[in-house]
Amino acid sequence: MKNRNVILYSAGINIDEGVTSHPRIDEEVNSLLPLLNTNKAISLLNHQGDFKKNSAKQTPYIAQILSQRLQRKVDYFEHCVGEEAIKRANQMQPGDIILFSNTRLYPEEQDNNINFAKQLSQLGNELIIGGFCKLHRENASNTAIKNFLPWSYSEGIQQELKGLQTWRKKLFSNQKTLLILGGNKIEKVKFLLSHKGISSVYKIIIGGLVLNSVLKTIGINIGRSAYFNIQFPATLLSKIYIPRKLIVEDMEGRRNLRNFTDIKLQEKIIDFIFEKEFLNSVFLSPNDYSFFAAGPLSVADSYYARECYDSLHKAGVEGLFMGGDTLTEIDTFSNTSSGGGASLKFFSTGYQ
Image (cartoon, rainbow, N blue to C red; front, side):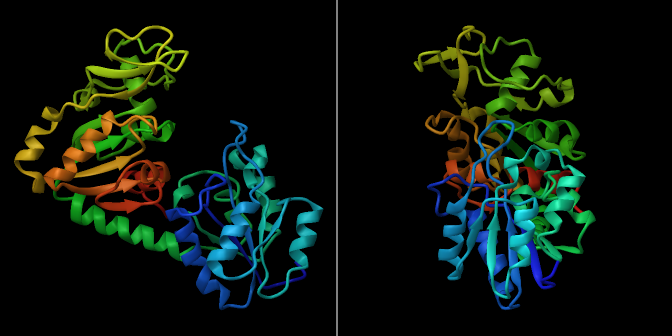
């Protein structure tokens, strides 16, 4: 590059337009503020949405949010690879900040394509990996790009990892663990199947596609509910709470209460009734337990399954809420971390 003082910062502000307050924004702002004092130019990469789901779009609104929070002009450029993007990066002056185009507008990003990563790397001279929420993702702007520039973790990621280490020692090394997993991402299911410490987990409460997948495995008709075609070992199934009453929605959007064996073909599962008796042993000695919670247990506008959180709150059980969707949809009452899959990977395999 002509300009030899450009920081390439790979951010993790995966938010939709209209969201102006979120832990992901806070994390990146707190990491970027000290960099403003270096008087270097800063090229920002960020991903939003999903190319495969056609939900990725241009994100000038994120540049506007950062401008307000950093009290420094953040320009937006509608390309992140190609001659125009490189030319724009080469024109940057000390103190300039540019958010380049959403990397997920390109299919190569989520394929962790090495050539795409090489093109991205031409926007700066030193790389900082931010966005704890995406730390576990093998995307080009997060993983393959490390092959082309000297890199380090952002202040935000370093703080998150230190916090997780503290919580692992304080909460999970000496207490029985309750695992609460939901949402629609396969990483939650993979964590159940691959986590080395899963045998020490006391009980498991599941919702979303995790629940659908387990019900499918044990032979329950789940109607038109989405699921992952994965088999679960009997040793794992024995720890999982299988709700007997489910909230379903038909093709017209009508909702009904169903016994878990009576779901109709045109219905999909959106929530479940949680029976507090499942946690009776926890209520007797709450200080002996802690919990992991990653991913919503139900759709955003249905609240029955959240009774399990209310029960843990009333009992005074301490734990960790993980992930953007979790923090957005749940009234958290204990420790929090912005990354769901990233935190799960930390407790499963860790990071280099």
